[in-house]
Image (cartoon, rainbow, N blue to C red):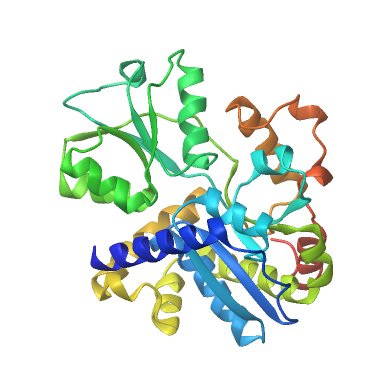
Length: 331
């Protein structure tokens, strides 16, 4: 937890600076500032490894770790970062800055968890407080959609960045209903058998994490963007074919050192489950992913309009993934 605390402090400090910062000038050719709107954990290994591989190919990546997807989006809008990680559909629709998603990283695999001493099923959450990752995040969208599907209205929604942080809060009893990723769901089951119930969730194919940037950046830095997208596809394909590759990449690039070597077995299990679910985007998403996202985020109330009438080009720039698939082949 010490490592998580350090990251949280750094992220909070950066956020404070960001609020008062004057937009920086455009990054130099070959430079890429990536705003990571979460605390990196096991589920981030594929993305972090792809970034390291992009560095090896000459892209000078600076990773800016923030603890909120909103802050990552604000960093793109304000010019403090070039590329963001998240699923900023609400932002794209409501903010005048022409931001576009240019590659999907993974689809949603989240697990609503409740303390069984207080809740047993979805209807028990009517009027109750729940904790999610961030405003506009996939975790919030899942909770809102499930509440809608089950005919309930959630009470206060609190924003607690970091799936591991929410897991620990559940264990400590400071929150009683939240949503976590697969790794932290398994950790809850192992650390407190029988204490928590995973509520059922209908099959979801929407984006969990995707890459986004301004239209100008995508145009002016196409070569760097292409390298990053190619490496994301390569790591996704390698890990899906052999989940043990995630541990090899972690050790090669010394990723998440705070977790220690004992995390390797958990990493392997996590990516086995991820591979079986087909969660990693092997071809970068694109129009098909956009349509799934339109349906999901519209139902969750995070974007407006009839999903069938929404245009892919208003939210996505698929040129980089088209070039990557042409080069690497389609899976």
